[in-house]
Amino acid sequence: MITNFFIPELNNHDVQELWFQQDGATCHTARATIDLLKDTFGDCLISRFGPVNWPPRSCDLTPLDYFLWGYVKSLVYADKPQTLDHLEDNIRRVIADIRPQMLEKVIENWTSRLDYIRASRGSPMPKVIFKIASPEEIANILGETFQSVSSAASYNSRFLEIKRRAERTPINFSTHSFFPYNCDFTMTELQKALTQAHNTSPGPDGITYTMLRHLHPNSLVNILFLFNRVWKEHCFPSSWREATVIPILKPGKVATDPLSYRPYALTSCFSVRYFNVRIGHSSSHKFIQDQGVPQGSVLSVTLFIIHMSNILHQLPPSVRGMLYVDDLQVSCQGSDMRLIERQLQTTVNRLVQWCDQNGHTISPSKSSCVHFCRKRNLHPDPSIHIGHIQIPVVSAVRFLGVIFDCKLSFLPHVLYLRKRCERSLNILKVLSNTLWGADRVSLLRVYQALILSRLDYGCVVYGSARASVLK
Image (cartoon, rainbow, N blue to C red; front, side):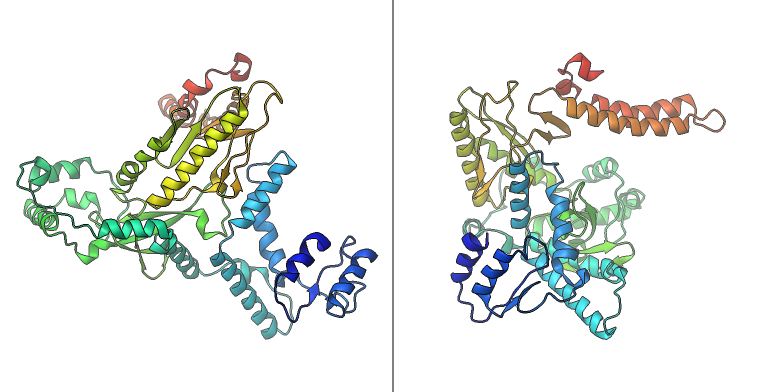
C-alpha cells in the first residue's frame, strides 16, 4: 500500500516539510517497511527502529482511538455484514458519510483535551470530563445541525436555481369564484377542529387544545376573528412562529452523531418558524427554520406526501415501485440479470435526477439491494450505483416493519417477531400474579396491545411462509 498508493498520492501534493509517524505494530516495523520509509522520509520518520523513536502516547489524545474506531465500527457492523465485500463497502460508505461539521467538533474536543493536559501538568484525565457535555452545549450542537439541514445551503445549485425561478412567479390568491375553501372560517368549523384535535404537548406558549376547548364563547369569537385575518392578510403573529424541538435518537444509530437524532417539534397550536432544542430542563438559543416545515407540524406530512407522490412517475414501465412517505421500494423481475441491472440502474438515475430537481437526496447509506432467487448461485448479484457509491447487496432487508429475505422464506422476520413477543410475554407473566396481578380483562387488553398487534401487522405478507417456519 505504501509503494502503490501512499507515496504516489503524496507526490501529487506539493508538501515542503513532512513528518511520518506510525505505531509499533509488528507489520509496520518490519525491516523492509522501515527501510522503505527511511528512503522516502529520511530523518523525518517517527517509528520504532526509526531515526526518531516512537514516543509514549495516550489514547485520550488520539482522535483515531477516542472517536474514529468506535464510531466507524458501530455503523459498519449495524447490518451485520456476512461477506468481506459487504464489510468493505460498509467501511467506505461510513467513512464517506462523515461530515466536516463532525470533524470540526472532534478537533475542538481534541483542543480541549490538550488544554486540560497542560493545566493539569500531565496528570491522568478523568474520562467523564470529555464523555459528557452540558445539556445546554448538547442542545446548541443539535440546534446547529437541525438548522443546517433545513437551510438553503443543503440544496444543490441546480435545485436552488429552479427554486428561485419558481419563487419569482407571483401567486394571486384572490378569486371571484365561490368555493367553500375560499370563504371565511365559521364558528362551526372552529369548534369541529377543536373537538377532533388530539391532546398533544404544548409549544413554547404553553397553550394546549384542552385550554382552547374550555374557552368562553367570546374568546372563541376573538380567535376566529384572528384566524380569518391571518387567512386574508397572510400575516402571522410572531409568537406563533416558535417551536420547541425534542431530539429523539433513531433506532440503531450512534448517539454521538447529531444527525442520528430525529427532531420532533412541539409547535404552537397555530404556527411556527423559529425553534430551540430542549434537553431535559435546558434549552438552546433560537435557531431559524429556513426551509420547509418542522417535523411534527400539522401540514408537514400532507405537504411532503403531495410533493413526493410524483416520484413514482419517473419509473419506466418495466419497473414497479411502492412509496410510503419517504420509504421507496423499486423492483424488477426477469431471467436476464444484465437486463434487470440496466433497468434498475436507469431507474435509480432517473430518481436521482428527480431528487436533484426537487430538493431531495437519496441516501446511499440507507439504501440496500436484495436479489430474490430461490436457486443458489444461478444468477450473479446486480451492481447498482447511486452516483459513484455502490448500493450494498444484502441477504435481507426490512421494509415498513417486515423483513424480506432473499429466499422469501420470512424466517428472519418470524424469528425477530418471536423474540419481540417473548419479551412482551414476560410482562404478562409478571402481571398475571395470582396474589396481586391484574384481572383477566386487563391482561387481555395488554395481550392485544403488545402481542396480537405485532402478530397481525404484516401477516398477509409473511403468512405465505411454510408451516414449519410459522410454528
